[in-house]
Length: 284
Image (tube, rainbow, N blue to C red; front, side):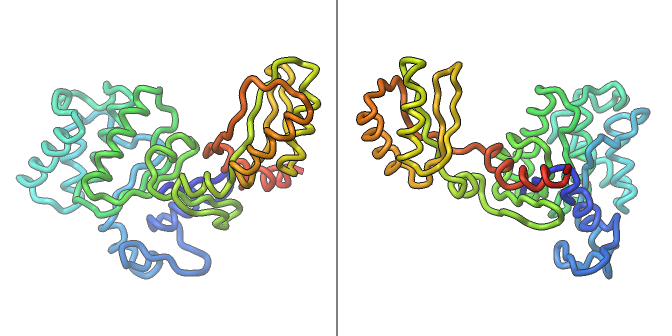
C-alpha cells in the first residue's frame, strides 16, 4: 500500500500513530488486529519499521547490528546468529557482514535497515520514505529489496514523495490531503479516473490558434498551447470519441497535423490534480 500526499498532509502523523509512537487524539486504529492505543506492545511485536533515515549503528558490523536487534526481540543467542546470517544473505550483504556499517554505501545501509526491520518475521513492515536522500543506484537497490519482500509475502505500508516509486512498487495507492483520504485505488485505476489527454502537433506556427479552437470544440475543455513545440493539449474525458471529433474539427479548420493521439495521465498528473488546489489555497 502506497501512501501519498503533499507536505503536511498527515502521512508521518499516521505512520507514528500506526506504529504506536504517537497516541491518537480520537478514533480507533488497528494493526494486525491489535488496537494501537490499548494494545501497543502487541502492535510493536507484530511490525517492523524503517524510517526516512537509516538507524543502523555505524560502529557495529552488519552482522552485529542484526544480531543485536534479534537479541532485543527476545531471540536466543544461537537463533539470533542464524537469523542475522540468513538476513545478510537475503539482502546480499554476506560479503560485507564483518565490516562496520558506517563504511557501507547508502544503498547497503538501507538494505541493512530493511533487514533489521525483518527480524522476527513481522507480517507488516512500515517504510516511511525509505529512499529519501539516496542516489539513483541505491534507490534502485532499495526498490529491488522491497519487491523481494512483497514477493515473499510481507505486507508493506510505504510512504513516499517519489511518485515513480509508488507507481512501480505499490499494488494499491491512497492519496491523503489535510488528514483526509481524497483518492484510493490501483495506479491504473487512479490514472483512468483522471481521464486521457488529447495531444496534437501542427506543421506551421500560424495554425496553432486554429488547432486550439478545434481541440476546444471537440472536447469542451480548456486547452494548453506550447508555441515553441507547436503542440496543443487538452483533457479528453471520452477518449476515442474526442479524438474522432478532433479529427473532424481539424479538417474543417484545414489544419495540417503532424501528430495526434491520446496520452494517458501520469501519476504525477493525478497527484497534482488531487492536491494542487489545496496546496495553493493553503499558501494564500
